[in-house]
Amino acid sequence: MTTPGRSRAGAAPPGTATGPASGASGARRRLRREHLLFLALVGPNFLLIAVFSYWPVIYDAYLSLTDWDMIAPVKNLVGLGNYADLFTGLGFADVLLVTLYFTVGVVGGGMVFGLGIAMLLNQRLRGRRFVRTMVFAPHVLSGAAVGLAWAFIFDPNYGLSRVFFAAVGAQSPAWLTDSDWALPAVIIVYLWKNTGFAAIVYLAGLQNLPREVYESAALDGSGPWTTFRRFTLPLLSPVTFFLVITSTISSFQAFDVIALTTGGGPAGATTTLSWFVYESGFQSFQAGPAGAGAIVMFAVIVAITFAQARYLERKVHYQ
Picture 1 (cartoon, rainbow, N blue to C red):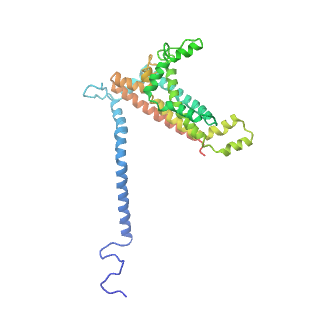
Picture 2: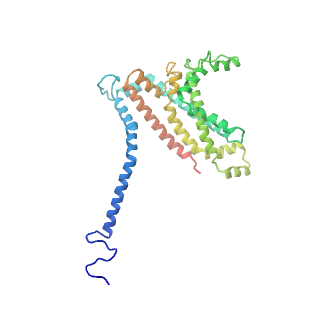
C-alpha cells in the first residue's frame, strides 16, 4: 500500500525526464563525448601531417606558378609558363627517359634477384641466419656510406673494380665518368642496397605458403619449375604487388647515392626527376622550374601507382 504524497522507492524525482526522450538525450551526450575524444586523439596527429606533408605540396604547387629566384622578396606569378618550358625543352624529355630506365632497372632487377635469393635462403642450409643478416644489412646502411663505398669500388685506377677486371685481363671502365656506364653503375648500387629488403619480404611470403599445395603437386608429379610457375608465383602475388608499388615509389625518390657518386652527370646521364628538382632549386636557384618538376614527379608517381594497382589487383591471388 502506497502512502499518498510520498514517491515510491526507485522512482525518478519530480521534474526529471523519463522514458524514450531521456534515453535519446543520453545517447546524444555519449556520441558527443566520443566525437570530442576522437578529435582530441586524432587532431594533433592530423595537424602534424597537414603541416609537414600537405602544406609543402600546396606551397610547392604555388611556387611552380612563379618566377621566384629564392632571393627576391616578391614572387611574380607566371601562370603555367614553367610547365610549358619543361615540356617544350629537350632536356626534360631526357630526364624522364633516365628516370624510366632507372626505375625499370632498380624495380625489375630487385624483384628478380630478391626472389632468387629468397628461394635459396628458404632451403635448409647451414649458416642461413648469418647469410640472411648479410643480405639484409645493405638495406639499413645510410645512403651516404653506400655512395662513398661504391665511389671507391668503381674507381678505375684505385678501386676494387680495377682489381677485378685486371684479374680477367681487361681494363675497368670509367664507371662514374663515362656517360655510357654511369647509369648502369648507379642502378647496380641501388640494386645492392635494396635487393635484401625484397629478399626478406619474399622469404617471409615463402615460409607462409600452404604445405598441402606442394604435397598435392608432388603427388601429381609436378617438377620444380612447374610447381614454381603454377603455384609459387601465383601464391606470392600479394607480396609481389606490395614490392612493385613500394619499390617504384622509392626509386622515384632516389637521391643520396646519385648525389655522392655522379652528381647527376656526366652530361646528365644520371639526372633523374629527383635530382632535376634539387639541381633546379638549390644549385640554379630557380624555384619555379623546381616546383614544376616536383609536381610532375608527384603526378607521375600517383598515375603509375594507380595504374599498377588497377592492373596488378586483378592478377593477385589471395589465399
